[in-house]
Image (cartoon, rainbow, N blue to C red; front, side, top):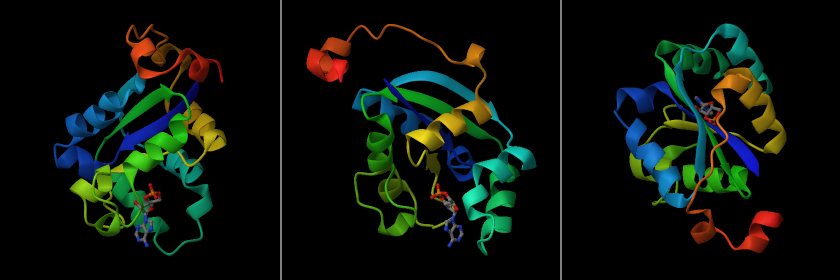
Length: 155
Ligand code: CMP
C-alpha cells in the first residue's frame, strides 16, 4: 500500500487547523500510520526543498517553515499520493478548488497550510527525513472492507 507524507505547516498549527486537516484525511478512508510534532532544521529543509533552492522565495520559505513547529503525518492508502494531493489543492491557496483543504481554509501562496508529497519517490525520501522505523505503526484497520473492494487491495 502506498504511503505519503503530510506536514501541517506553521500557519496551520497557529490557525488551530490540525484537527480539521487530520479529519479530512481520516474521513476519506486513509490510514494514519505516523504522527508527530517537530521543529524542522536547516538540514532537513535544504533536503526537503532542494528543488526550490534557486527560487527567489526559498529564503522566505525556509524561515517560515522554521518559525514554529509543524505536525508531520504519514498516511497509507491505495494511490495515497495522488489522493492526498487532490484533497490538498493547488499551491496558490486563494485559487484552490472549494472542497480542498487549501481551497476551504487558506488564501496565500506561501501560507498554504499543508505540504503533501509530490510523488511516490519523493514520499519515500520525505518519510525517511522525518520518521524513524519505530515511529511508523502497522495496524489493522478493521473497516478496510468497507473502504475498498478486495480487488483494489490486491493492485
Ligand atoms: P508547497 O507547494 O507545498 O511546496 C513549496 C512551497 O513553497 C509552497 O507550498 C509554498 O508554501 C511556497 N511557495 C511556492 N511558491 C511561492 C511563492 N511564489 N512565494 C512564496 N512561497 C511560495
